[in-house]
Length: 156
Image (tube, rainbow, N blue to C red; front, side):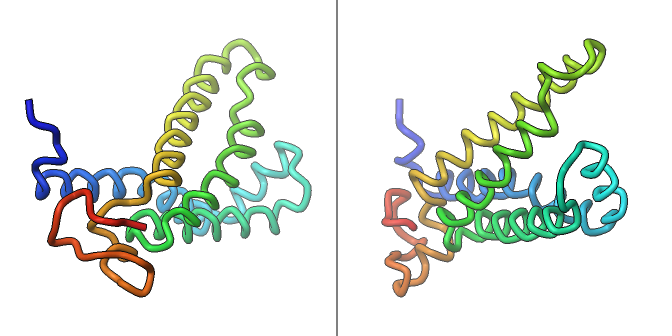
């Protein structure tokens, strides 16, 4: 059976679809934080977060820059790092299933494991980059080659 790498066009499409899927949750989350800043700040205060306004602004910046970085494939390893730095404490603070009432444990465990899956995707980007069809790979200034070749082209 052929490996997907032997089908460059399929590989490129799947890579772009994967980047879109991974970045979408962060971009939508940032949009939600921006459009309901007061509500998100109140939730952070309720959760015991110090300096909720400052931390909320930082979260928005990390989600926007990191999400766009993954989506566009521009400086994606740095973008993945930003999202990892955001995701780990957010998961431990807001989805601590071990410390919530029993009726909330199942939902919080599901949210916790969802974030672990997202963390896995971010770690894959951090290690492998975002593929041949990315801004990093299209721009020689960043050490890339073009998108027209094999899926194994040098990427960011």
